Image (cartoon, rainbow, N blue to C red):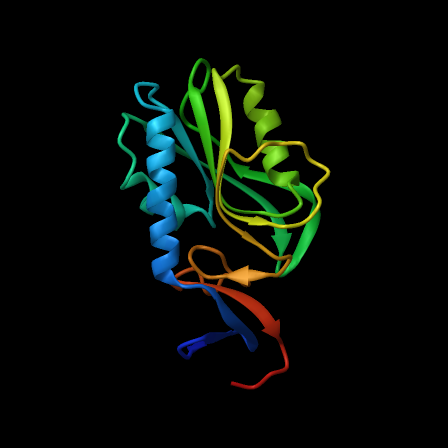
Length: 189
């Protein structure tokens, strides 16, 4: 088995992660974000775009609490290799819905450098949507080159590598209910 958990930590593929955000806090904040988005987009029929794979749990939990009529589509991009950010962003598969004239809300799991979300916003703007805004569960508290404004943020976190709640370490840990930060790769559990 590649994952071993205790109450406050988890080992994934030999690396130790400690609990950063508990499941209950995640769910409470998502409900608050859904209320904010619902109020802002009442009668505007937004199209939510889930950035796969990491944002799938956030998207599912958020949409359960969204009240206005809305649509959903998916896009998959990659900017990570293990724990390292890559310089090149790759679109692996794209949208199936028309976005022209629609209010678009991009749903991200985490924003760090801002390069991926900047890339996505630029690509979507080419299709002439009515508006594009971003909702991210996590926002790393670091300087960014990108000037993309994040309209809805779940939690600000330090510049640490995280896994759980949809985010992975080499494909493992997405199913964890909490969010865990990498603390020490040599610490035995």
